[in-house]
Length: 430
View 1 (cartoon, one colour):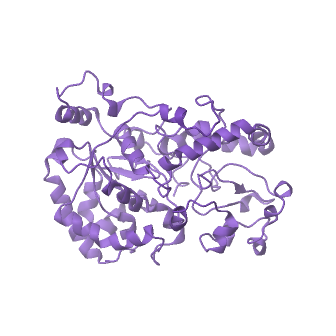
View 2 (tube, rainbow, N blue to C red):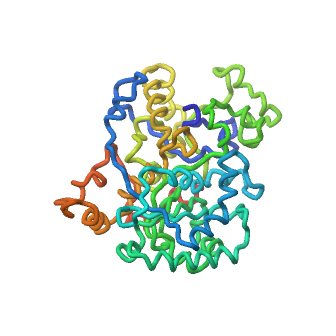
View 3 (cartoon, rainbow, N blue to C red):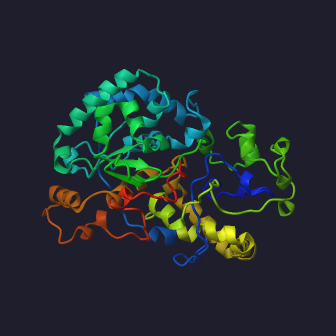
C-alpha cells in the first residue's frame, strides 16, 4: 500500500527547480472532493467489494506461427525484468513504460482466457513493442522482427474474428510515449504492422489520437522499476531508493543541496522542513487541465473512484494563490484523521487493480474491462451476445452484465473523443 501513487513534490524556494520525489511517479492527478460514496473507515473491504460487479471478460491470445516467434524474440528479456534483472539498453526513465510485460504475464494463465476464439470478446496480440523499441530483446534482429510482424498481420487478418469487426476488439499494449509519433511503430515492427495497428485498440498512457495512429485506446497505468521489491511489498522511502540506485539524486534533493540527498533535513524533522508539500506530478510550463487529464490520462475510472481517494489542485488556481489553494488539503491532512484513514484504506483496496506489480495484481483484468467500455462498438457487443448467449439476443446491450453501467463516474475519452487533440496534456504525459 505504501507505494500507491500518492506522491509529494519538492517545491523549493526556486519554483522553476521543483523536482518530483520519484522518477517514475509523475503521472497521476488528484482531487480534493470529499468522500461521498464510502463512509466506513474500517479495514473491512466488504463495502468496497459490494460496489463491484462480477464481470469476466473472455479473451483469446493469438499463437499463430509468426506471432509465437515474434513473442519469443523478447520472452527471455521479459522474464528477466519480472525477476528484477533489467536490460542494460533500457533507460531508467523508460522502465515505467513496460506495461506489456506485466500485461502478458498476467494474462497467460488467467482463468478468463479461452482457447476458442468464437467464445472470446477480446483478442490479445502477444508482442513486446517497447522492448523491441529499446533494442532490449534477447534477439535484436530488426529485419527479422519486421518480417515476422508482416507475416503475423496476414495470419490475423485471415481469421473470422478479424473479419467480423475489423480490429477494434484486438488489443496491443504499446505504452512508450514515442509511439505517439508515426515513425516509431514503423521503425520497430515495419510498415505493414504500423498500418495494421491503426485499426486496433492499444493500451496507452495517453489516449490522444489526433494523429490517427490507432483505432481506439484504453488508458492504462504506468509501471515502476521496483519489481524485485514488490514481491515482499515492503515499504520504501526516497533515501532507500536512492541508495539502491533505483532513482537519481536529482529526484530527491531539497533546497538545491545535492550533497544532502542521502540525508535530507525532512528525514529528521518533518514539520520543520523547508519545502512545501503539494499533490501534483512533474511540473511543466503548461500544466494539464484537470478535466483533460481525467479524459485522456487517468486510467481505469470505472474500476477506481479516483476523486474519492485523491487530492488535486487546478494549476491556474495554485499559481494565483498557492497558500489558499493548499489550505483545504492541509487542513484535512492535519485535522481530519478519519478522512485520511479512509483514503488510505481505499488506496490499499484498489492498489491491486492499478499497480501492475502489486501482489496478486488484477490490473490486466481491469484493462480488459475498461476496453470493453471504452473501445468496443455496439455492433461488436451485439455480435458477441449473439455468438455466446443461449437465445442470441439482448433487448439492450447494457442489459448484458459485461456492458452494464459503471459503479463510479467515468469521463474517459470515447473512441470519437480521442481523435480530438488534448492541447493541455499531450506534451506532459510520457
